[in-house]
Length: 246
Image (cartoon, rainbow, N blue to C red):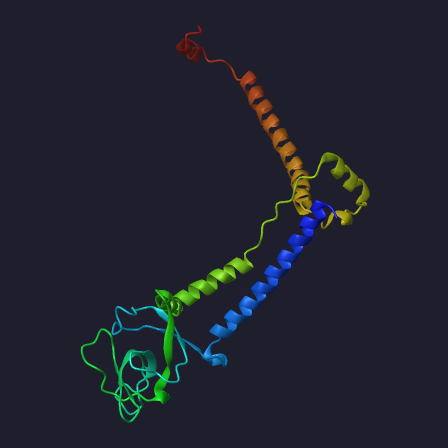
């Protein structure tokens, strides 16, 4: 086995290993990020306030994973209990203490007092594991109707815009061969690049040539008529004297 053959074999093997590893990594990442709406345990939440600064900032996108047993100090994402004011609202706060009844006392890192509502395990969505800055603002911007309309229109224009064809100019020999083999009706060239352009040029030449010849004839006749009129017109002595010719 030559060195070149051995090198190609190793390169193909390395490529296959890389493809398999990439496929497995994609599967694992998909499983880890699989959203809860499709049966997974991952939620994506956008920070809407400043109560958790400097831990989380407005507009950050947060990935939330299940946390069945939050402890004191954990940050949890939960819905305000339905029987409380603003019930159902999603909140990201830290667990300050666990009450004797098992409910959680929470407080924002940027708040001076704890929350008044009693959060239970059934209200908890999970705990944040990752945060991506500014993504939430982009999501909010993308949800605006004008932005959606502009994006949709741009995609439609790009898909429907006709593509310009730039056929290569055929050589002289190739053109003559094509003309010889195309047949009398020209059907053989119907699908060749530039065929319609050549037909248009031939048509223009055929139509414009008689028009040009007719214009030349009219101009020649007009010029001859003017010269004949000048030759037959009598010369005025006063005009000659004025011109200094008498």
